[in-house]
Length: 394
View 1: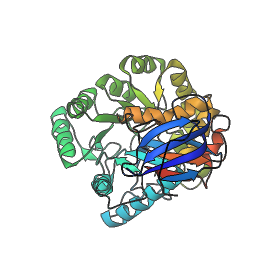
View 2: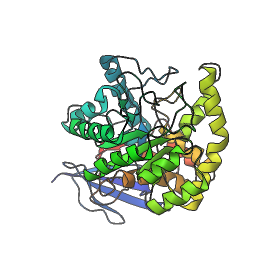
View 3: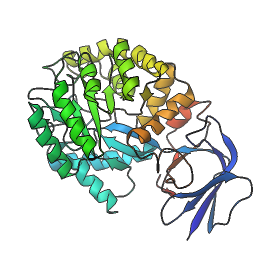
View 4: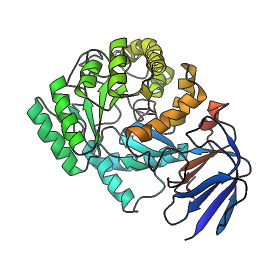
């Protein structure tokens, strides 16, 4: 068994709120998994890589992306055909990995592009990209958020939802995405308008959970957030207007919250004058509330995940690390912000192999110049070294 040892590391293992100085990582070159993580006397290895006293942390995860989308357009470029959308998606995967993201959950894709790319990655035919938990087409009501050509799979009753989810799973979806409320990017609805009913969403959850899969609900306002939590979804996506009643129920049910703050921030920072007024009005109103609501949920104990809604206007695929300083601005400690990536692994049920740097987990890690526990902007470093399964990719 060929092994590589990475030495002279200041290690943040992703689990403990401390830096372990003078550490090493011993990697099985064939499997890409960590054989040993420690400090002091070095075990034997076939190759030694001295990381020069830099800071090493687990690769980031992003549990809310739309790799087919074009963030330079007001509508995300959703009308593009399958070939340009696929080419764009591959480039975006490269951008994600270069930024430090080693695993994603795609939260809805045209033409099932994410499913097909996941197959190529697993077959070793697409490299230098993150691994994907694909969702395929999201599920929406007729006329609702997601009712766009080649994107949403439309359902208008519990029975239609049951058949559609079963079909999506048959096609290769490894997670299910459903639309509980209106959204920012659809003119015909509002964030506080409920869309899929609790009964329809419950069926999606039931079918997904039968197969051991997780369900994400796009849910920005009320009462749609409450409907989705009651239906048993695993994560609330966005949750801009989450309230005390919903927070209490999320704690009871163990529901995760993916705030996608950087997606909203990108609108506020870059979009004025470049998108329709109705779209800007929605996100501007939400921006006033979402930050305090997300912090309240975190302080109450709701598990916060790292997801950015990458692909929405001005929210490109290099911006995942920027979510962490934004969380810190909202009152998260550096450690709490960094824990959102581990929460992704727990939500996706892959934390036995991903999310922390421990023996028998994959050697997906970043090499940084500064300590992320004392300076969260360390993660935003553009020229960071990115390792996937022990191999340097960028």
